[in-house]
Image (cartoon, rainbow, N blue to C red; front, top):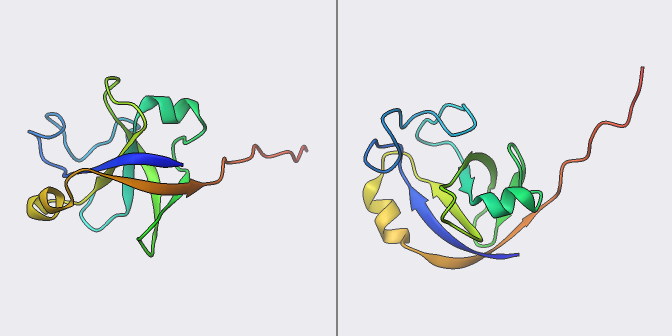
Length: 108
């Protein structure tokens, strides 16, 4: 899947008055490999805690936040408090891969 990727920091002026808590209620800390996704991607199966491979990055990222409803086909890569790194990243198209989590089929 090809999406537009931007970057964000855990700073109040970029998020809200509690920038260290995601829209899902998870805590953000610099160094974590998290992404926020546009809500249309949530509807496509890219849900909370999904592991995502971003082409060009060695590590997997985890969906831990969701973006404002105005965004479509977009991810936001968490870059801690490093504003310059986020600005340098800018906005670009990237390829992502993910597996839709399967519900547990085991019964007791």
